[in-house]
Length: 405
Image 1 (cartoon, rainbow, N blue to C red):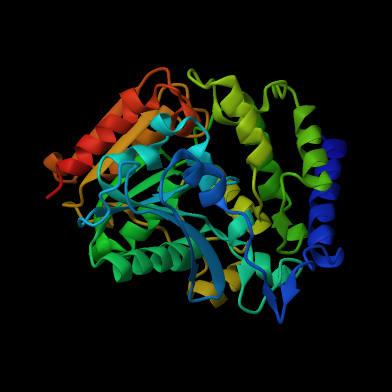
Image 2: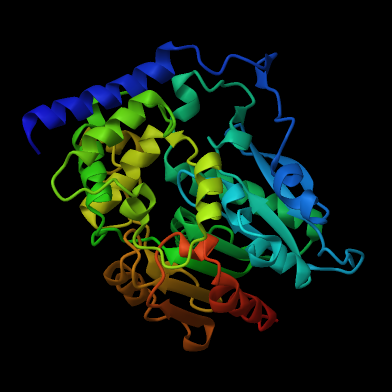
């Protein structure tokens, strides 16, 4: 990395940190230390308008974040008085639950599942627009953003699973995409959630990232790892000027083509509707923590699934009692847990070689409990927005769920 370009990137990230520390942004709508819940949510904009019932629900994590969820208890034709199997759906990084609902209703996974007789719950991770609340911290405070995906494993997923179980009395099926697969695999390997989990569907799974083949993603990951010690824990807001400038600097790198940013990041998606992409770009991307981005970059660099590396053996010792961050051992995932994995041949983030490493770590899984689907033409976004995803992926997901007893 040329020194000048590196300095540019450092300045960009420092500006991000300054933005979160010093701007006072986010002070609007605060009442007695709390942020007002959003007046317009995903239910009203993307579910109810299609004729489905939908509830907005807030769930508090043990570390004080207030996570927004949507519950679609029945299909458009009704029938919610019968006992339905719950399904929890978790989005990926830099997006929120809205990404599952951008196509027409007959093409959206949550509404397809509701029409097929499931009780559907959509999760929204901390830091996204509808989950940007905390019992004592406010978004302009650095402490609000002091977390990585480790905290999604330890706090967010258990909170939403516990809530769904408390309301339904049933174990839930799980669907994760991208980061939603990473935090699920890490959770299962730690023995979390498995007592409230019926099965897991992992779309475009991410566990190992060493073969990620997007030049833009690789350059970004390298930049984050190299400057991790130079900034505080702050918000990474993709729509803010500092991050926009950061991306512009990356786009000047050799081999990085930013003409089509979605393709540059996710791979050559085969099956997206242009109007859906426009809607996606109006609603996404969402904020996350800079620490989370650094943690993902560490996963790219190190080629292992491990907890956050504080960059100093003493700091790691203080947090973990050992000089290096503990590994998430995926071979500890219960071998009898029903798992469905679907991955694409054009995916720049979930590279085929990395998925093969994941499958190798599951080699002792019960053969009849592991279902694998490979789609040659699919890239990362096709799994959530592809116009033919219902026929190729979602019908298989429904069939998989229906075979679990």
